[in-house]
Structures are given as C-alpha cells and as structure tokens.
Length: 228
Image (cartoon, rainbow, N blue to C red; front, top):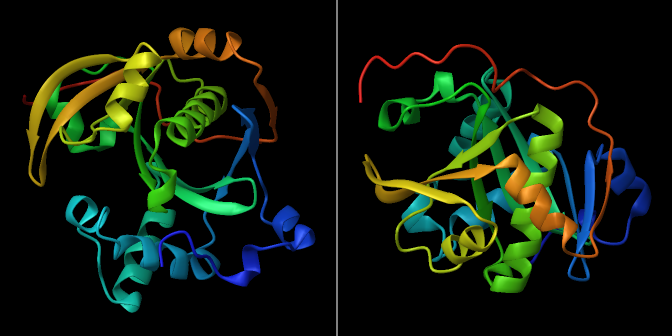
C-alpha cells in the first residue's frame, strides 16, 4: 500500500489550493510543497505510513487509528512544535515536524545555540527513499524551515542505519556532531547550517515560492542545559 493515497488528493486543484500550501520548491525536476497538517484529512495517510515495514521499527507509531488520531491532534496543539505534510507534485510523501530545541530532551545531548531549530522528517512511500527524490525533499525542507523560522541551524537525529538520508545531508555540508544513544534508537546528531544549504541550492536550477505568513518563535532565546 505504500505510495497509495486517498483520491481526495488526486487531481482536485481547488481542494489542493484550499490546503494552504506555504512553500513550493522545484529541484531536479521535482516540485515539493509543504502545508500545515490537517488532522482529519491526513490521518489515513499517516496511519498507512506508520504501518509500513520501513517506518514501523523507527517511529514505533503503528497504532490503531483512534490512538494515532489522539497523538496527531496533540502534536498539532503543542505550542513548541509545528507539523506539516509534504508533497512531490500532487502526491503526499512526507511528514515534517519543526520543534523548539529548548522544549525537547535533545537539548541534553549536545550544547544548543540560539537559532537552533529541531526537525523530524518521515518519508512515507518507500519508492521515494532514493538519493534523487530524497535530495529534492530534504533540500526543499531545509529551504522552507530556514526561511519560515529564521533558524541558523537545523538539528536532526537520523538513525545510524539510515543509508539514504545520511549521505544526502553530508552532500549538503551538514556536520555530524556526534553519535548519541536515544531511548528508542542509536542516532547521528547532525546540524545543517543555513548558509551551507542555501549555497548548495544556488548551484542548481532551483526555484521557490513562499507564502508562510507568521511563524512561531521556535528557535530564539537563551539556551540553558541542565544536564548532558
């Protein structure tokens, strides 16, 4: 079932326009867009993704629909994070979380700096986990988050076994800060610099349109670490 989405998302331009797309980015012949999550409409897609073999062991959210609805609703209502659905052309392909480092346990694993923005990315359909599509999705994601939040660095923690994402972000010039043991995985703690990623964008025939409106202040203020 990976890659199959409800017909609601196929071919209905009016409904797609009503979904409040905030960023549209074209790279390597692919158009990637992001919009805020819509719980009721997007829940069946996320439920499908969370039960896929390539996602289930890492996210551990292969829950019944009702429980996932509660989890997703709580995520959208949290003041320290924003959640998005991402598309390649007209197909939903990824789930994106931007979060405030100061409000997350990840701050205890490194020395955060003002301007750090936390990020989680799930690429749903297995066929999009390839170097070409992965590069387009991650580059668009970085462009979007840097422009929306004014972040200096995007912080992520991909699983050490991730053979697609880690090589891509290394190409972008991301720094691997360290290897860390999280409660549910062993991960590479990575930092993607704004200038480095945008310089990479400039080397290609990329184009972007933004309609981002107001943004939460998820990456400002003084960082304090109580423990490491």
